[in-house]
Amino acid sequence: MQKGNLLKAKHNFLIYPFFQIYTKVMIKRKFHSVIIEKKDIDTSKPILLISNHVSWWDGFWAMYINLNLLKKKFYFMMHEKQLLEYKFFNQTGGFSINNQYRHIIDSINYSSSILEDKNNLLVIYPQGEINSIYQSNFIFKRGIEKIINQKEITLLFSANLIDYFSNSKPSLFIYLEEFNGEFNLKDIEEAYNAFYMNSTQKQINRER
Image 1 (spheres, helix red, strand yellow):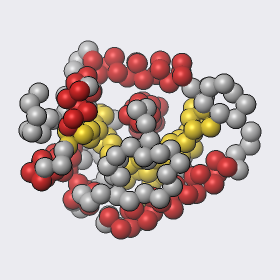
Image 2 (cartoon, one colour):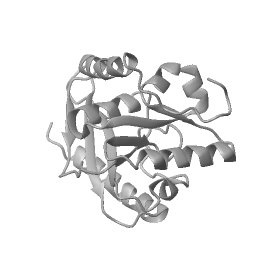
Image 3 (cartoon, one colour):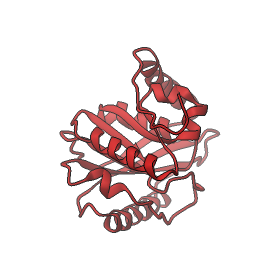
């Protein structure tokens, strides 16, 4: 891998299946339980999954969603510096983005091309960086509307929340909701913030 050029995703015939198995094993080992709350999701089209970005676990949680519900070919955008440091992820569907204008354009175009295939899932974290798990107001970086580019896709929101309750291990609660509004940055951002607030309220009211 060379720094500067777009690092396109690969799905190594050994590493990619290992990543899937590793995801299942690690989540089962590290979490008391995983609860997914969802409504009907249209999986007949390419899926763009956008989520809160809170930890090292985020990619594994997205893969878990894919393995259990969506069952698509897995792609995710990752900062170039991290992708060069953890080259393993490039072999499991990860591709690069950095702060250079030309690279951003290349990453957006590549992301858009991924969403031309109904068998693909693209995962992005629109806030662009890891935030505190207590972050409740999300400001999305520009580019989502260019990635979608009037495509027929399913835009899926995910809110990943952690609670311990009376257990020594945390439980993972994944809330999913399909977005049905206009594909522009303002509407998507506002809808995601409303969805996230609603998800956290459900979590607060959850029976122990």
